[in-house]
Length: 397
Image (cartoon, rainbow, N blue to C red; front, side, top):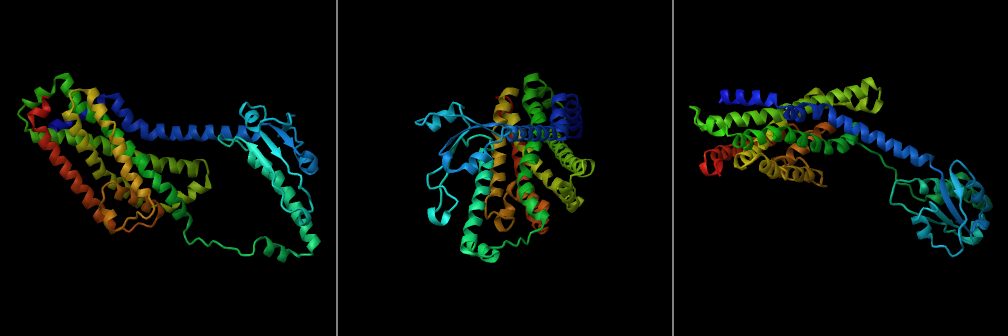
């Protein structure tokens, strides 16, 4: 068994593609992707904030104050349109970015004329700040009209507040910052970790079974004096080792990049959040990934043994990503908590536990159910893998 394991590890270390998925991907690629996404998003937002918006105004004679506010060359540029113009059409062909239609009952005397319904026509499908910019102008005018009406009625500040908002529902959040952010971040953590671990195990698994079939080296291994059960155990340990190392590197990457962001870049939020997560929590996240990786290894090895070629193995392993995402999605559903039967559902229970660990609300007694169910499933799948490897019709199909 150890001879097979040693042989497979040597071949694994010679494969640059596999090393890339095991080391470079979790350490560099994902932080780089997040950095690029953040940079591009910031650039898009900055562009939207500085863009000069072309607009058309209908009924401007009723609201001279708004007309004056829109006279900001660095933000707005007025475009004249025909009286019977199709607003949707001129916005679609980018003649204007928005059309502002002011009704005839627009007046500062809201007590006499009532509420004015200003219409803003614009394309809200993409990233733009049309509504935000126009709403700032309208809201400021609305406040002026409001104060004028209050002055006419002779209402003091207390009565004004009571009239605007007769009843106030005050929200008192009993959750701390770690629990709030942990709910958001912890729910997405399994997506990153499980997919990376699966990817890290998938590359060697494809080569260990289907790859050996294509190279014709599987027959040589089978006629050696090594028991078949030990051969499959050695191959299984190699895949599990690759996935576990990917998991370890991924968790270490999270810690390292968290420290870099919190200390090196002096981001207060990240620093405060990282300070609340104990090293024990990171250790438990890694330990829970180990039996999950064993499940991945057993399934991937079974697929690789069955496949006739490297390409066929890859096509069979592709849907594995979807099968992994489904139980993770279950952990995000309302009402699904790390209690009762959910603590025994493989992958879903680990996803829930990761979220609880990040939130700082973990019930550590549930670890018995989590490890118990995951280890049982991993053992059963490995037993099937051994049985599968001993079937001649599978090896030489």
